Image 1 (cartoon, one colour):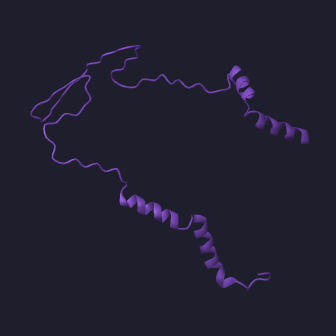
Image 2 (cartoon, rainbow, N blue to C red):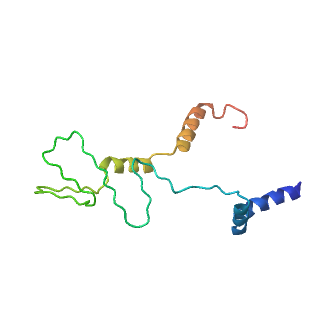
Image 3 (cartoon, rainbow, N blue to C red):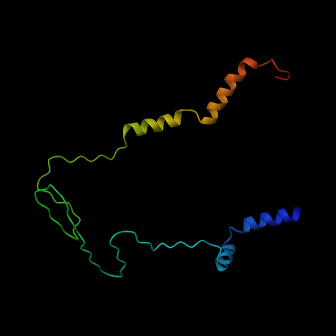
Amino acid sequence: MRWLSLLLICAALGSCSKVAGFVGGAIGGEPSIAANVQAGRTNAQTVGRTSVTDQRVEGTKARTIEQSAGDTRVRTESVQTVVVREDPPAWLLLVALLGWLLPTPRQIGAGLFALAARPFRGSFPGG
């Protein structure tokens, strides 16, 4: 029985080695993940340069619409104020502070148990 437990421990530790990975791959033990998945309405898998111009505008209320297939810049006529907010919101900092200061669930349970056991101290033998 001792040899069996020793063999199981060696097998568990040996499975982490590089050689065990090659042996497992040779007999097909590793999972196969296909990372070549395309999900969408218009998909194209090309090597080199490609151009996709499938665009449609439906039901807008804008005065003018300008479409382009390759330009991703933002154009505007005039900008009055630009506000860039990169700080985390104040409520997130408050939640982080409270999470750091408040006790853990294990500490809360131990405190409730100690509170419930306080009236019974000394009434049982050995306590």
